[in-house]
Length: 460
Image 1 (cartoon, rainbow, N blue to C red):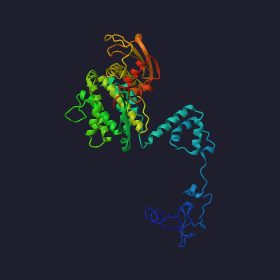
Image 2: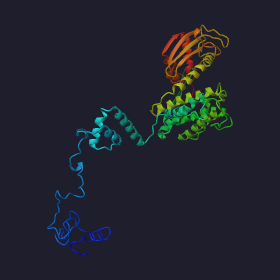
Image 3: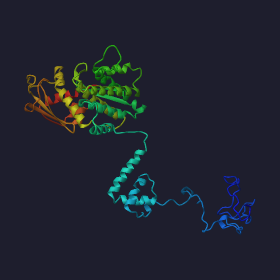
Image 4: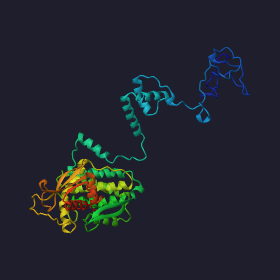
């Protein structure tokens, strides 16, 4: 097996993977001499049929001998002509099924320039494919995880509502606790991507006191500490742990907050988020496992009490208001609560107005009323019609002369109209009474007293 016309162990020499000498291949003219030229004799290629050597080198293959490996393509930076613009190409003429099958590759930018032009021309004339292409592009965007997951704060609420519509929970949250559950979840979603800079961003808490505005400066972490301390009133009423340590219980909301801030060795940091969130979850779990029967449990705020069902609506309102304070401090949008929850908050404020109005009159902050007429508790008396516009609105008749009286349309002496969110901002002390009412009609003194009473519902 050593004849000149035989194929001699091409893959068994040092040049091949099996240790043999490298034999001639297509495009080789024969073994090289020491000077780098090709020797025309000595070997034959099995592809030539054997029997002798080819007469001379053939270093440059002709058209009949194409290169087995194409040369590297020149780069545009090296002066080679640039790739053709996809817009300048004449689109391929493809059938609809083929174009539809290319939509996924087009969304991933994996089509050739000609295919891209053909698909994009087709999308301008086919509505069904255009909708599918947009859906695929959005799906591709979700595959690329951004640095910050700035999710819509209401996303959790919408997902849970959709799930619960299909399969109710075995242990449902009472209706009067759902606004608190939703607002704490929305605020927690807002906080989840905050860095140290956001947690220490300055926040100005505002409320109405007496006849004017009051305020207190803190940070985002300080606001969460404030919510943790005041929500602790609900926790204590339910028999849960009080976030304030100490032998002497503190009941008034503002005093609880100041005590919590002073007890902290350092200003509050992001570490306050965990205890606040766990406390909120514990409150919702507890009222859910009791079957909603704790709704009448009294919760003390120091100088007044609220039943638990109203106290949780009050805390949901405070959570939303302070979430907006935080969102404003970090320049982030924040939407109002769901219409049903917003309506519940407005209803609670309207029911509290007669008592607040009577207290302001007792301390001399409200006029005695020139036409004031006291009636027996439970009987209709002079009333102001409070009309709240918007998705969370409605209509309430506020008794003016006694908290025990009943509001009545037959005894209406004044009418005030406000937007739902605007009324809530008034009740939060973020809008002055003079600027709040969009429409006023009737007894001017009664209107002024009710608007100032609404602002007096606010507190730190």
